[in-house]
Length: 486
Image (cartoon, rainbow, N blue to C red; front, top):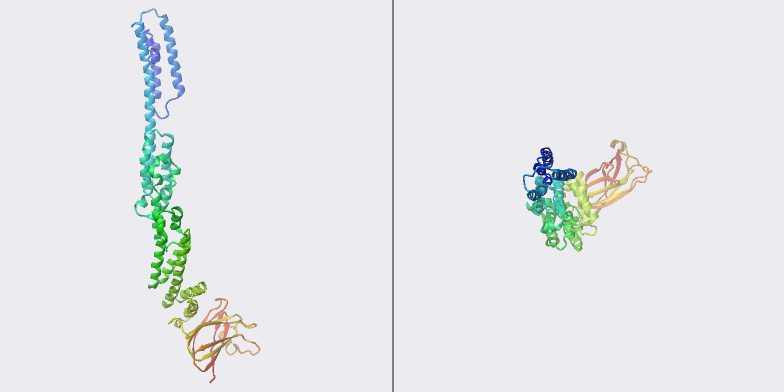
């Protein structure tokens, strides 16, 4: 009866002090271990209490054998009652274990609720801002299923993961395909972090949404973003057999056709840049599609550069037109428009200094009739380039004059430039049909010197001579002598 922890053996013997000590020890134990918590109670405390009960039982046996007073109950009844009362400590252990288990369950449910709150907080922000929270919440879910798989909280994790996937992929549900790419790619990594049996159908769910998002985002950025391949290349490499991958090549080809038609519009230059970026994207695609689409895009870009240069010239953006047409002639040497591009580039460069030269495009044909000689001597120490446009357009380069120097001023050069008979001045010779010309004199070293532009009327039956010289970094053309050769 003393093993019950209530000191009832002492009560039968009317030993009130040890009975009170047993009750006090049991009461102290209850105070220390209740309420049950997750960590349980100290093993040493339980062992100590058990030792106390054994000692109380042994002491009760000793006292009972020596007792001279009759017991209040029959001995066999006392034995039966003691056996029954052993259920008190045994039942207490069972109840305590149950209470401790419930405490653990509540603690795990609290962890689950905390992970849910982290997901809800992350959902209110962009994926980039909330990614750390998403990873932390997933770690919480994984710990529950890995370490406490039989708990009530672990059995709720699959439903929570469904909500988790919806939260992470929210941009896809809202049709924001470019914003959805990164979170969907993250979701494809989740099966490597948590048991696929727990994920179920969620394990493979992100594949199709990601393929759709890569296609939609790639097509939306086609002609805008210039990253090689971009999302479309990633789509074809990651999901080569998907429906979306099969739409890439015809989609890009249709866009090239559409943008090519737009070259005939009012502003072909931005369209040309779009086509150039489409070609860059096509170049990054895997397989034979890259070559085919790149060739289509390159052909469209050639047409676009030509249209852009013409549009810039007509809009009197002469510096831009000169650059565009010079690049065209250098890039597309085999093009039937290469020679014409060079003449337009010359006219545009002259027009940048002398706008009247850009009133009309250089003529495409060559006029017949006589051509008058124009001979220009170079009294400058640097080579001089003469650009001209009129009935015909072209350029000539005159070597620099060895031993010649720049004149301090235009007045100092008057009557002296190209007049020193002791020097052999390099000469440039032009044969020009009659008409009005615009000429630009510039240094051949590409612009260290300031340019000089002039207008000149060439009349039939005359020969023309001129002289270029330099004054403090500027090329000058003091005038043209005319001789009647008729």
